[in-house]
Image 1 (spheres, one colour):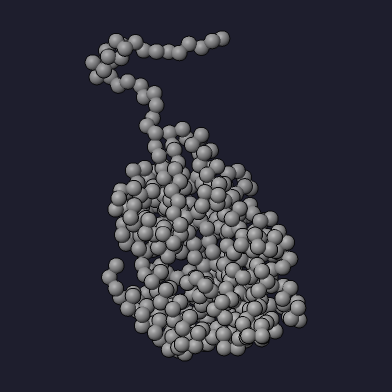
Image 2 (cartoon, one colour):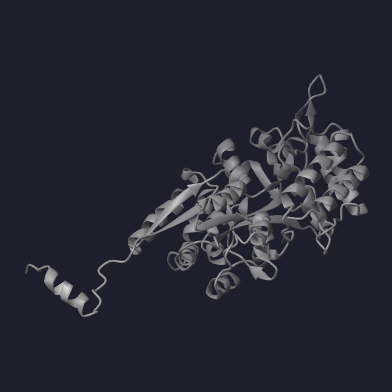
Length: 425
C-alpha cells in the first residue's frame, strides 16, 4: 500500500498563523559540537567512528574535530577564547586545569556528570581533575610511571631480577653499561631525557616514594630542600659520574636495545611495539619503582570538559557521557577503545574490566595494578605547573652535568619555583 504525503495548503497555514496558532515543528535546528584535542586524525579514528554513529542516532547533532599539537594546545585554547572560536569540548591536560578554571574557561559539570565520575573512575585520577573541591571533567587518558628494563641486557649481564632500590639500580647499571674506545656510552645502564617530563616526572615519582610531594601543602613552596630530595638527585647524578649514562642517552633509544632501564610512562607501549615488534613483551620487563617496599608513582591525566561559553552545554555533556559509557554489557566505551588502540590507559573501571586481554599483558598489568592499588599519586594542580617543571628540569640537568651540586641545584630550583608560585596569574 502506497502512503500519501500529508500536506497543509498555504492558505490554511496562513489561517492558523492569523488566529495565533503555532505551526507544527517539523524539524529541529541542527547543532554543531566542536571537540578539541591533541590527538592526530589517525589516533582519533576509533573515536571519530563513534562521532559518526552518535550523529546517526542523534540527527540534529554534528560533531567536528579540532586538532592542535600538545605543545600548542593550551595557547590554542586561550587564543580561540579571545577570537570567539572556542571548541565546545576540551581534552584537558590535568596540569592546565588550575589556569583554565581560574580564567573561567571551563564549565562545572552538572550533578549527574559529577555522580557518573564519582561512581565509575579510580579516586586518585578523579583527584587529578578536582580543583577547589569541585571535579571539572570526565577522566580520560591516564599516564603513570614504572621501571621498564631490557630483559636481554639483564640476562647478558647476569642480573636475575630488576632492582628494588636505587643502590641496586647503580649496581645493575654498572654491569650493563658499555663505552667505546673514546669513553662514549653506547649502551646506557639507565637513561633519562631529553624532554622536561623525562627529567621531572621520574624525579617526582621518586619524591612521592620518599613521602614528598613536590609542593608543600600551602602550594606556595616546595620540598626540594629536604635532605630526601637531595639524596634522590645525588643518586641520579652517580649514574653520570660513573659513566653509566650521559645526556646523549635518551629514553627513545630503548627500542634499539641501547638502554638497560628507565622510569617510563605506560603510553610508551606504542613506541615499544613499533620499534621492537609484537614480540616486545618478550623483551621488555616492567617492575615497581626502585625505591623500596613503600614505593609510589606519579600520575597525570587528561579529562574531558566543556567550555563555559559553549552555546550547547547540555548536549556537550551528554556527548561526553555517551562516549565514556560502555557501548554494551561487558564492552569498552568509545574512549576506552581509542586509548587501547593507542596503547594507553584509562581509569574508567568499566573499561578496565572489559580490557582483561589488552590490559592483562605483562607490560600493562603492572601499571593497572599500580593505578588500582592507590600507589599512583598526582600533584595538586597549580597554574604555574609548566613553569615550575621547566625550572626543576634546568636544575636537575645542571646537577647531572656537574655544573651544580645536587644540594645547590635543588636550592636554586626551590628559590625559582617559590618565586614562580608567588607571581600573580
